[in-house]
Image 1 (cartoon, rainbow, N blue to C red):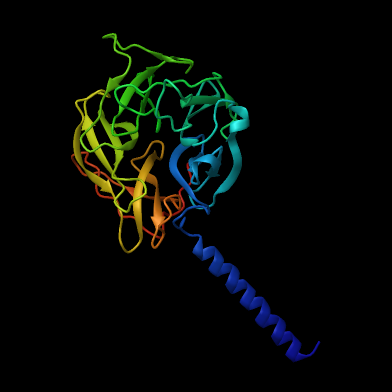
Image 2 (cartoon, one colour):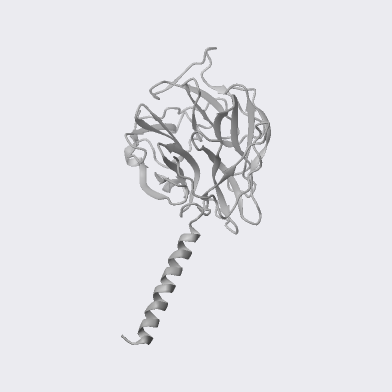
Length: 330
């Protein structure tokens, strides 16, 4: 082999090595969005040492008849799991399958969802359902054969459910659209709801400015209620929060913590949060609309860091194109 060929081979090998290195360097952070495709309303969970994101498939209502999931061990590299929930396994679902909430209990995984976008509960079947599987990637199958909550109570459309486990082991569900937010106490087997000690079943905990997308967590004995404000198709969709001493309030609105950045993306909202177990590392997982997009369904899932100040207030989140660095759960 002559010297010219050797030089050519060496040059090709070097360029290939550089290309691989550049590709690897580009994945030092998750990037935003964290995976391709039009998705929204992400539910972020940790099961074992794996991160999971369960989003709404962001399309026209009649096309929203399934849900995908995504898993990662480091927040940077994501694996897609197709159709973990499909309307073929939930016969009463016809369209508008929205906003997953997933929790593990007793070795099984429970998948709560909103469906059918009902506006009149006397004429339409729909609302919040629940499905179950033996693995976080499903397949999830209908648990009840009917909605868990199929009525409009306290003015709250039965959508956008979030399941919250309190430190005493009790599970609650916070939900509601149309500017109204309810909390209910779930049965131990998730087949229904039970009254509170005062006999009330559906407690209204609607904070000032609430639109939809509620979420609750507990930190340092304080309860945080977060929600989305504004219109979901508009640039000013955003996330605000309140704090209180109980899950039922009073929950006082404090501030907006997630919103658009006109240099990065618009419509940043309907989120969830992750806390790395045993640490004070927090992430916010949310959807937003790429700059220049006007289609309401063109939304993507992103992740950024979330921080607290010394008083426990959530600091304004800086949305980024870079996303977050790799974080493996030890």
